[in-house]
Image 1: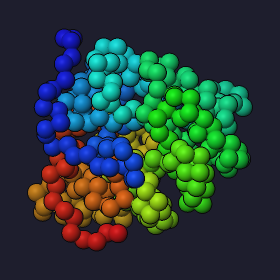
Image 2: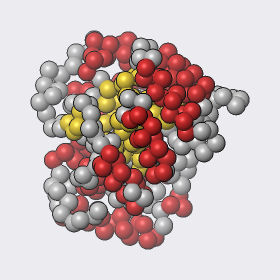
Image 3: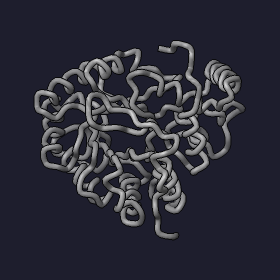
Image 4: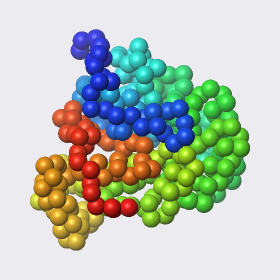
Length: 323
């Protein structure tokens, strides 16, 4: 493959950038998630084309975790190859995040939120990605057993070590989010962002007060699974296609597609068609229009799919007050 040279017009297209809470960071409204399609089991050439396309269209934020793959760690290894092959000259234009919190290696120190696990995991992630630091490091999930102060102080110390520039948390309950905001602010490492699942089917962060707390405290919010792992596309409107994520049954179970949900999805699709949009475009625009949301994380199995998702930036405003 020829040597990559980024599109000189990459910041002159559709992409818009939003301030992340009360910080100096601007994130693209659409960010690229590496949860699927970038692991060791995936074709590197295809993954490379997707990432190139993303950057050429203004997507500067790449979101990873230590266990993304499969196998675990291989999505970060893909980023390491991409850095060497294409993106090292553009490192300062990229905002790279990774996470630790789920099981990563055997034994008592390869999981959850201890200082030992978080520190060791980030060191491993940096080696896999072949970079000196990440722009953002997350606690990937709330640990009910480790004292919050230990987890939070480890995050503070990680920033002070220079291995991460900013700190985020993902899927923490409201009470723990409040503790994190206060603790990190008092230690001069303010919480940059909260990552949670928010889409037209699952509005839990809104219902639990997470988005209100983030907005009130100047913390950004980024939505993962804004298309509900593909449910909020036209893919499942006429059944479960062979080879689809639901047909594989690992993360998206067939029993989720109940008759009531299918009826609701078809109604949403009809509304989107009436607006001259796809269901995916409307669903992404719906999330982005929430006042607390900084960005949405989209996955992509092809450049065509990513291109289609970026059309949400041109979508009409969803007039109904969903919130």
